[in-house]
Length: 226
Image (tube, rainbow, N blue to C red; front, top):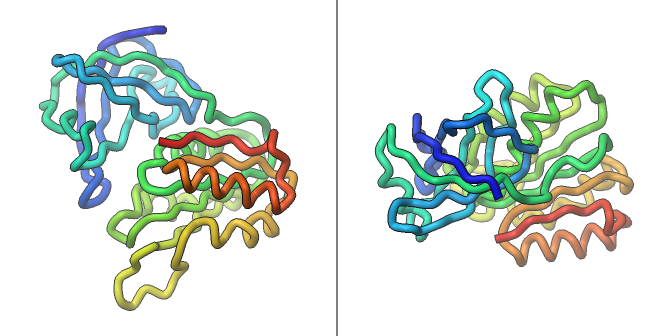
């Protein structure tokens, strides 16, 4: 598998618990939106991260990831700007399969590869509807929420739906698990849609079972869990 070095060029808080990190590889870095890479620190510790940004011909080596504080992977946050890591990849099959109506479902940092897919697909010449359903704790954990909400206003084919599991007082939007909204969204899209799922294993498994019961074919459901 391909290996190369990448330099940390920027960091930014995505939420109180999650930090966005932007790297630039020392070689061209083509990939399919939705794939992941493995980053290895100097001490040999290796961690896999979904790439949250699509391939850019303008900056072919640049890529973004999301790192959660309080995890073993959080040691990456000690890397200073200008610091380098070894990268292996890209890998993974959670990539766009065909031009069709699509329902993307994510929880937590599982939104990373789906953000890459959304950004990539919105640059394509297609009118098929694209709905991203995202579940998080509350508004403070809505990763890339402002960006995705803006895109939903600007692009007629894209819809961004958020549900909070622990909303703050006064929240008037959707509440509960993403599973609660699958029937509604499948009905609005098309049972012949393709579904792309990313998050913790129980969520991905449960969503897969529910989508099958809603008439989505098994071959049309693509998931990645952690």
